[in-house]
Length: 161
Image (cartoon, rainbow, N blue to C red):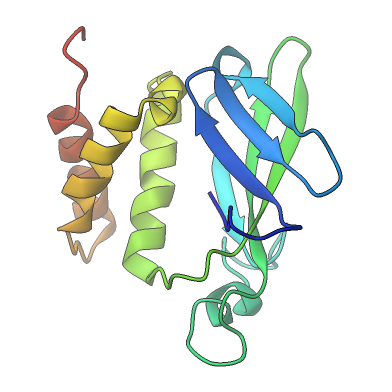
């Protein structure tokens, strides 16, 4: 997540063994999947926006022009053993992601974490399948968003489940 091509940037790698936070001038930090509790959310533009999950800067950063790729986002989660709140920062990817894509991603995070299956984000086949399915969707209501994500998760279900 984020701009992994930036030489001095922040980005989060979704690996088989967990979330890996890349930071400038640091070796980074691995958070194993079993430590991640339900309730994962993300914000765009500000760590703690005044309203909602997207600050004005977060939305401007996706538009063409001088603001393109500016700003960043944050994954917010509670970790267990030991229990702590943790925030992973990532720089804005230069590709524009529309509002529908952001809301679908947020719902995918919510449903997957709630099901206790965050480790699936480290499975490239599952992630490619579910995001490929969601890329074709343009739901326009909260219910349609929930249903689209649930259907994409069912369609991408690993064989062993």
